[in-house]
Image (cartoon, one colour):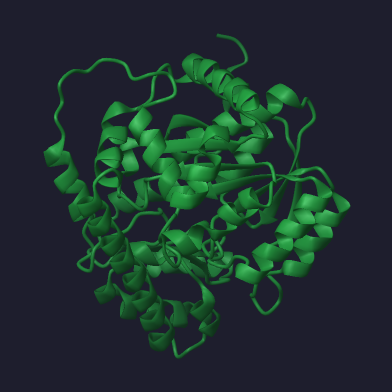
Length: 390
């Protein structure tokens, strides 16, 4: 094979760090990089309701699913994201495609947009999840960035508003609700409402990345932005992932939903997505979809799930609060952060020192995943951070 050197690409930072972490023999080590949730003892956590759902599964065959995915899975996913009443109003005009996790949903959306626009433009926050940049660069989107944070580390509403005004009709990617990877900061409710007015006037097309649904302030609160945009008649899509909120990381349960202006448009979009999905993945993941639909279609199990993700939210808040306290309140801005991630704004040499001296693994942008730091490791983490920053 010729020109193999052209295939050379840098390793994925998160999984490279994980490989280094796994080889590290130090018992005090902490992987604050990869986006998973560990229990209070630092052990991998599977939601009890997910274990219960798996036991309930009746595997009658291993036949293919429909190209779009399990119909009940798609329906229940739409209900949980849109809410009961908006679902009833809009279900006939929402195109749905089961995907192999949230990343695959983003990929399918990119294919859809590229099929109807040869020169797509997308607005992204800076910083954002690294895979967002890789994905849109791969599909040839022109990427326009706005600064996510102001100097006081609050959400930069003015920066986003200015970028929107200068780039009317561009696509824009938002992360859901109050959570954001990697900053932990996003618009509040009133800011989402103001953004909807601007976006409708400017005719932007919106994609929401729902990677952490329910882990910010709850399902309804986290979904407010999406529901408000759809109610405002803004062309809106959403990439849904169940990796984090159902601990289904390796099982890859996702959905892409696209709002449309008519039933005919919805049918065209669904047909395109099915054909495109067939070329790349052939068929959705039946096992993952069965787990999710078993939970969402059961009043008892969905009630248990909502309680369990509330417990995760409370745990994340407690870990942040403990870190702030143990680090002499040098990181008070973390009070307003939500979800798994926050930035510590460390320098690269400080991050390297954390790894070498304390076996604490962190991304080069100093993103920390509080879900990956057990409570009994918080003091060790805080002491280490104080040491490298003073």
